[in-house]
Image (cartoon, rainbow, N blue to C red; front, side, top):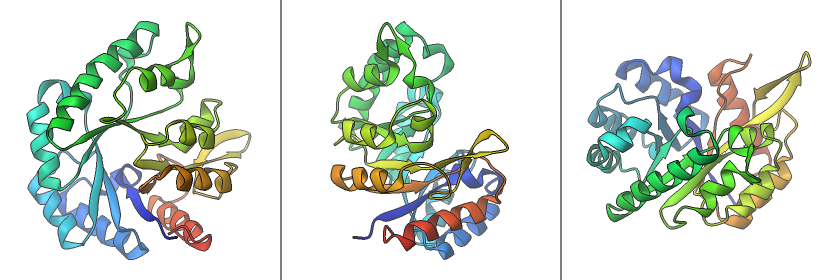
Length: 253
């Protein structure tokens, strides 16, 4: 069964500085075979222009990364922007440093549970993107467990990042299953070792257990498969292309 493959635009952030650059970049991504994208680092481009470019290329915007400050200072604007984009999931790219403590996870969970419920009233959902620090234990509990257990599963989702789960010493497939029903979008990103250093690489070019990860995604009903690579030795566009072709070879897109 084919899945919906998208590109996380953070991967090509250096090529989205202007609306003209963004159009060229999205044209290249569309030509690779991607049908959806995640809007990340694009708030410098007017929302109407961003939406128009995506529509003209028949690329759906399925999720964003929205700055923390906008959620807490301009939630009405966040709602308007997402409706304008035709995007139902407002995501945050990571936990602000001030919350990375035993008390901080609970404070963030309470604050963003309320924000997620407000978004829910407007037909949107909130999604939290993990890194590795959520897998540090605080008082015997993982930060991820605090976020999972102290938020509303109907409105507070997770954009699980396979690389960062592995970097945190955890099992990506196990966490996909643990978050069943709360992952609509996932970040597919691999890990390898080069010159004894751990680095990000293209999907199925590294050491993650992809058969198990993709099986877990199917079992739990993940909807949007977003390819990402923050940095690495391969050209950003080549990276997206290689990942797409690898997924296609195993019949996953």
